[in-house]
Amino acid sequence: MASKACQNLSQVLLPFLIPRLSLHHFAKRGIKSISTPRPNRFNKSQKLPTLESSIAAALERKRYSTPLRTGALGIKKGMTAMYEPETGRRFPCTIVQLDRVQVVAHKTRQRNGYFAVQVGSGWKHSSNVTRPLLGHYAEHKVSPKRHLVEFKVQDESGLLGIGETIGASWFQEGQYVDARATSRGMGFAGGMKRHGFHGQPASHGVSLTHRAMGSAGQSQGGGSRVYPGKRMAGRMGGEQVTTQNVKVVKVDEDKGLLVLHGSIAGPDGCLVKLSDAIKKPWPNIPGNIVEAQSAADPVLAVA
Image (cartoon, rainbow, N blue to C red; front, side, top):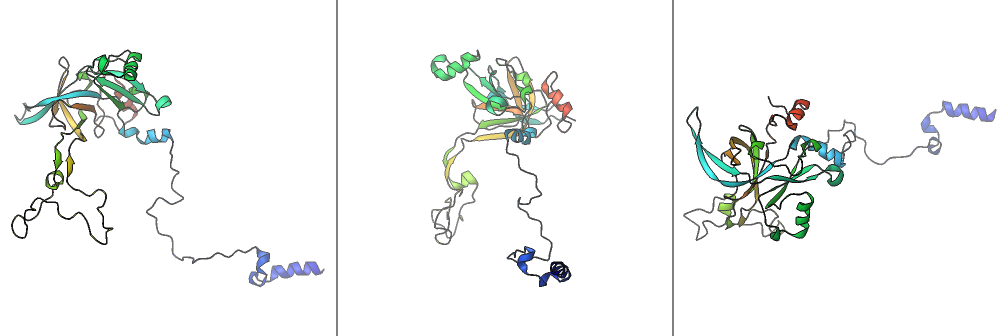
């Protein structure tokens, strides 16, 4: 009877009258906010999807920025001018020549983690090629090349056969390409030429420092040092520059020439890497993989 009376008493009594240990209560330190939490601008919320760090997820994220097919290698021959037949306007053009461009090897996802086509151009004497590279050419039955470059593609459908030749007709008249080349080296240049600084005043208060850079940082309070990335005088040029959305004006398959609208980086005789423009719709090339991919992907189809 006494035990049943105690049980009834514990049910009737308020919770705060019962000893704390019997309720398994654990105190939490801190201040509880009465307002709703503000949205966090950092990616720390538990509602965000889990980031995928696999190779397959990385390839899927880069899918829409990876060309459907391989590019080509060319040599910049110089510049000229042409006239528009409708308006008669004169515009500058760049001449690029494709010299014995050939597929040398493949890079696959199973073996290398990505899909790519290794393309070579030109010719090189076997005595000037190292033995490992000479064995690489011999394995794929391709003559030694002067230049060797990789072009990434979306999937295995963009892998051309080893030994196939890429001519000037690989690109169509009117399509857009991205041209990559090493810019002309200009040697050591000052701040005004390299970064466009305005310089010091040209008249009063300046003595022989009109083109000087000026202060490079604080002497106190900023660490007494020059911050990384400070724009200063130094070597200018000699870097890879990508000129996007260059229009192909004319194609000469017999001579292997491409006429591009406008100018591209690099001096005459430099190597130019040409590929389909990633900021324009993929070109519709008859009998090629691009048609099938464009039909399957309406976002990238040509209007």
